[in-house]
Image 1 (cartoon, rainbow, N blue to C red):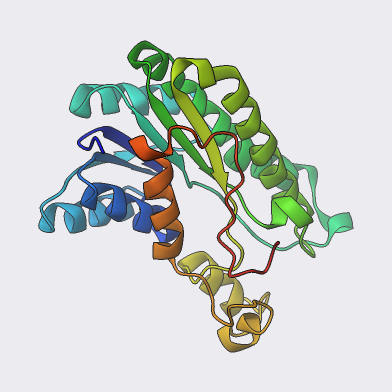
Image 2 (image 1 turned 135 degrees about the vertical axis):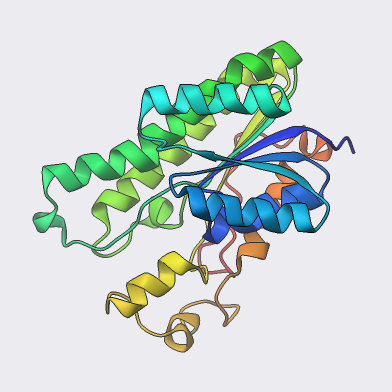
Length: 249
């Protein structure tokens, strides 16, 4: 299995993105940690470097087209053309459907769906030239089956799933794969924020809704991403690989 490729992880400064960045670095890849929060990205990069890995932080708002173009130019300058992309940057929250404002709706679209589109588009020319590429989008079980009070979030994640399948169809002949990982309930800073806000119940109650009887961990998702980004996953394309403890079958 070939290592030492250039990998980009969006939203890499916390939660799932952090776990994925750390895992890809441990696999031997050069990891560009992209995040809107510069301090968070730098913290993850320091963690990777302390473990002997190669990484660099890049600040970017994935919903800003010019910022994305600049960020990926910085990736090329520091590490070379991107060969692996994992899109983990996202926002999430709860709003009753009839209370979702147009501004809120558009913000979810901009970050979760348009941001994924902009980042995927940014790497495809490099991957086509290399005749090799791995794109893994982090979607959500909410995009597969909906979720109460998450009409905006669910819609964007469903869009990510459909878009990923289309990329797979369009670019398979170039040696590029595109797959999506829709987690269910993952123990993360985003989850704990929602619990503190009273939007979600405690972990022990959430676990009862999962056949595995536990919350997912970032490492669970990172392990799947690691495989999908490898040479060995070259014939896995356009797939929805759930990481959900059996909650979505």
